Image 1 (cartoon, one colour):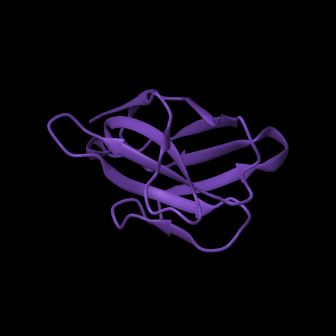
Image 2 (tube, one colour):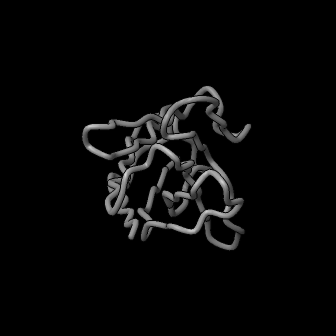
Image 3 (tube, rainbow, N blue to C red):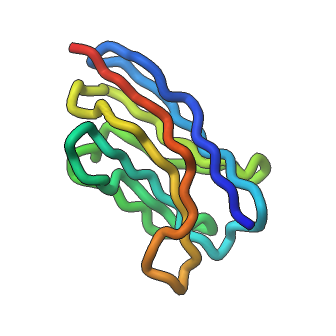
Length: 119
């Protein structure tokens, strides 16, 4: 079955950058939608970015447009979230997730990686 493992989180000053990685295993992902979500303390989980693995539209939350970029490396079965111009409000646990195209819910999730942005 599908397994997702995030890495790359850490502590960074406002204005800095981090790149998160999500290593995917357990299958081929050409028929999957891959996404990033985050959850800050005391808040609900929120959508960050998503794309279809095989190509097509890429969607970003308004709060991260122009600053975050989602990408993939097919050979490594890895997707990335490049985060630039980080703000303190970006502080959260970031999760990668996956769903098959014909479903509406993300049913595969990673364990999360902490991103902390200091002012």
